[in-house]
Figure 1 (spheres, rainbow, N blue to C red):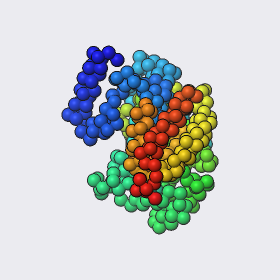
Figure 2: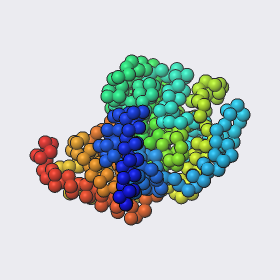
Figure 3: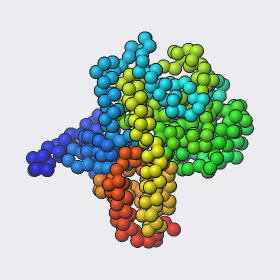
Figure 4: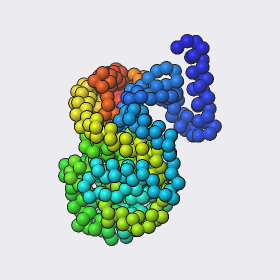
Length: 427
């Protein structure tokens, strides 16, 4: 960059910081400074571009970019919709939402035939809770360290005291059981009237926690036995992230309700969905005004959803997530094996990968070292020692090599900084 362009970039970055401080969150501004003060201004494929002319390999993005950023087919569908009819009146019937619902049902687990669209994952959780309540399941059962959002109902089932404490009281009759513990779930379901159970097939913000084989099948069986309403939160894990269209399909489970989001629109516009059995959906079927939202099923979001499903199918992104995930997991584990005092475990399913460090501080330092190497990863909100990778399924061989090399370099730097567990204060 020339001297004048450097000066211009500094001005841009300072203006952005000032606007965050004055009009948004001062805490968010400080967090941005902690991560280098970069300002992102563009994206394409696996890359994010910053105002200073640099680019970063994006294997974070909290699971949104399975298709990569700005996939041409999804962009083209959205642009065409914007140029014709971006937002509907909601008085008349409108084709794009009907087509998107049909496309989503076509790839959903068998038996899930009805759809309600929303804008965010938390909105989808709220709709699912209401579906359960209208059928008399007012008691809620979720899992420790599960994450389902931060609106009041979703927060009630997000079992994390840090986020709940300032906003209590939340929804009553809520129980949290250890994830992966079938006996604990059975006891909770037997302890009261029929409940609504909500959980993730793999915990994401909980630190990429993979349940024991057969766990979801047992959860489904217990729900049937106790008359419980089962909601699988696949907002992160769905649409191919796990190397299957849905985590439910890994064990052949059909819940009453499945929640989709994040990569559902190809990373272009916000959209989420509740996909339900006809029985679970019946109250919404009878009264279309029972649960509404102005922007639910907006044509612009529906165009993105249809295109994202088409791209995932035609470009075999789900299969790619499985094979690429296996490769990445093996290569990252091989690197981590040289630093057993730093890394406790590298685990994952498909393109949802967690690296558990010996402590939260190490995970934070690793994120910074990777940023210095121009690689974006994420932390885990409910597991601060776990660094999380959610790469796009469109990574090339060279991009995979760059990621592995950056991970190797980050661990090498941390290894020099902390050559033994004694230096970490961790044993």
